[in-house]
Structure formats: C-alpha cells, structure tokens
Image (cartoon, each protein chain N blue to C red):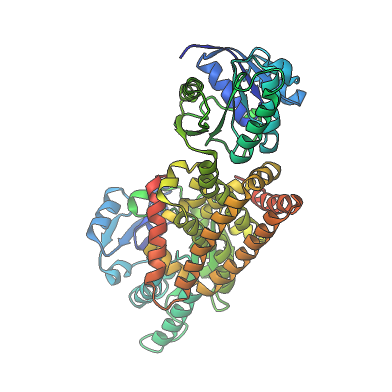
Length: 291
Length: 291
C-alpha cells in the first residue's frame, strides 16, 4: 500500500504505541505523531521509537494527518475524535481502537452533524469509522508496545451506511498492513458479541479472583492463574468499558448464570451423566478455538 | 536422598509419566515400574523412557516396590491403593496424586483397617499418605509427560495423626527431590481449599465456554482464551473430581455467586465507584499471585 505521509496517534499506550511501532518497522509512514497528555509517557514513546515526534497539543498534532487513530480510554474517545475532526485536514480519515462502539459511534455521529452545520458543509470534512483491534493485554503503557501486537489478530470495523467506500477500503488496508484480519459489523452487533467474548470473561475472572481468600492463593495452580489473568486489568479502564456496554454485559451475564444453574442441577443430581454432558459441551466449544 | 530401589507408578499418564521421567533424569531410582491397563499407553511410556519396565498386572508390579504412587483417575484411586497394599512389601510407602482427598483417604483408611484384621496385624503393613501435586494441564497422557512438571510446584500431603513420622519424612523428601515444595493439611482442608482454587475455576471456565455461541468464537480474544483454557480438560476425569468434592464445590460456587451479585448491583448503579472498587479488589488478589 502507498506510504502514509503523516499518521497521528492520540494516546500512545499499549495499543497506540504498538500501532506506531508496527508502522515504523514496516516502513509504512513518513511521519508518526504521538499525541498525549503526559510528558513522561511521550518521552517513553520517543525513546522506544514508537513515533517520530510527539506533542501534548491535539490540534497541532493532527493538523497534517492523513490518518488519525484515537487510542485513549473509552470515555475520552468521542471527545478526542471530535477534537481531531475539528483540527485535521478535510480529507483525513479518523478511527479509534476502543472496546465498545455503540456509545462512541453515536456520540461522534451526533457531534459531527452538529459541527457540520458550522464552518463546513454537512458531508464534507473528515470521515470517522469506528474500529476495535482484538488485541491487547492486562498490561498497559508504551513500555509494553510491540510491533507484532496485531499480527494474525482480528480487527472489527463498524462503518455506517453513509461511510464512503474509499475510506473503508483505506482503513481496511491499514489494518491488514499491520498483519490483522478485518471484519465488519454494526456497532450494535459488535457490542453484543464483545459482551460475551471479552466483557463477560473480565467480569467472571474478576469475580473468581475476588472470591478467593488470600491464604488460599498459595494453593492456586495453573487453572486459577489462567482463569483470572485478565482480572489484573486496569480497574479504571474496565469500569468505563463495562459501563459503556452495561445492557449487553447484563444480558451475557444472565446467559452465563443459566449455565451455572445448569451445572448446579447437574452436580446435585445422583446421575453423573448431566454433569459429564455439561463439561463435554464446554470442552467442545473450547476445543473449537484451539489453544 | 538415598536412591530408591523400586518405585511403582500405577497409571502412567501425564502425572505418573512425569514422575517416572523426573526420577530417571535425576537418577533417583534403580527401577521404575509403570503399571497400566492399556498396552498402547504402556508402550508409549517405555518408548519415551518414562519407566524402566511396565506391566498390566498391578500385584506383580508392586511386589518389590518401596514406593508406590497411584496416579489413576479419582474414582479408581482408593481401589488401586488397597490392591497395592495387599500385594506390596510390608514396609512399602503408598501415596496418590488425586485432586480430592476426603473420599479417597476415608475409603483407604477403612479398607486397610478391614484388611489389617486378616493376614496382617493392624498397624503393620504398608503406610498410605494422601498426596496431591498441584501440577498438570488440560492435556493428558504419557506423551505430555515432562521431567520438570513438579519443579517449583506445590504438593499437598494429607497425613493422619496415625501416620508414622518416618514415612511422612520419606514422602516429603521424595517430592522435594523432584523440585516441589511440600505442604501438609488435613484431607478436609485440602478439599475446601481446592474447591476454590481449582474446582470452581473449572466450573466457571466451563460455564463461560458453554455460554459462548459458535459464531461468536471468531471474536474471542486473549481474555476469553485464557479464561476458558481449563474447560478443555477431560469431562470424565472432571466429572469424577467435581462429584467427589460436591459439597465444597457448591459452597465455593455460592461464594462466587455472591461476587457476581455484587458486580451486578455495581454495574446497575448510577455511581461508577462500586464497580471500580469491585474490579480493584479483584485486581489486588490477582496481582498478589503474580503472572
């Protein structure tokens, strides 16, 4: 794909930093601007070569950007997208990397319509397409960034019916150029699916961890360790994610609780077969994913 | 520690095979007899050098053993311990590696008392001490055996008040010689603790897996994968484990469900603070374990 002149990354943590590093290693952009609030984080990003320059001034950072990727915490994304849209070139493409989509896409769409009636005509100006790379870790920050974070991982894009085809193709090529596979779905379907595949596991891992008393931890083996790993994630970030997808998370949780109830009935039965069937069904689903 | 003359391993799967391989690599036994039902499994054990010889005849296999380690599925362990006790030398030490202890220790104690009134005087004859290495995997069988499986892992022994001190010391040295750390507790405490640290995670991982529909699996990222990994375990083995510790598992599950209820209330609240507190507490416990 043609090399980008300038890519701006708002929020240079694990995801943003890894995007920068992947672009540099693959020589896909002339300039990569890292935008952040904290001078020390930006210093790490420069020192590790994740970006070519940094600024704390969002408007200045996006001024020449062809592509802007907003990688800030869920609650900040819509504001950062709108602030970028107000300051970037008219033909820029803006996307994000947040774990929920309905709230963000809704707020951005509304915000852009409002602003469109100002200095720009509606329909003119930069294009926003919601995105979510299914990559990451319970570890955070630019020190954890790797150029391979998106290789063989899935990225979900959530275009609307008004999204220009050309912009969608450019964004798809962008993620493919970092090694990812790209899927499209509506923001609504994204949030329903991710409630089950990502947000519910976080809740369950956290409840499992919270249900374990300190003296018992000495006897936690590999199973406990694997099953609770994501509970080490940042409580602030996950509070934002879960609240921004609360209805779907509660639905997924209800479905999970039905499984727990089925397990309880099976274990309380004198007949071992329902329990074995429950475990066999779970194994079948797990085995379908691979290790 | 002095080299064992003959160690007999009943059940040469992941655990039994790894014990054999660890003994051989560390040159801790002159002879290691692998005892199993299935000729093909025993052939793998011989070919991989996990044991020095094999037999399908338990009585013949334990005849000269100083130490017998029963590594068969939970439901078979008590019978295999008693069959070993009836055929092995009077001064032999017998232990097991099963994931639950109350049932097994109870059945073995009762069985040995009954048999003690026969050809042997009560109190004479081999000593049994329950054991449980907190090592293993959702993978099974002698092909998965490794000599390092017990290094830096915890082994729990469940001696009774009648256990001879010398036998307990020998068994403790045995597990330490394979690189493990040894803890002692009652069978009752073992089963209560493991219900929380091992059996509940298996239930929760299975419920999480079973709650996920096939089309959603394509969007399962690292969190889902980690959190459900143990659900790939053998349904037969886990049916036995969970049923043999049912009361404690149901208690642990009730405690887990209290955490889920606390989460639900927190997410339904307008105030983000209870949710953040819930996640922070879970993170604190998880962080106490390390990665």
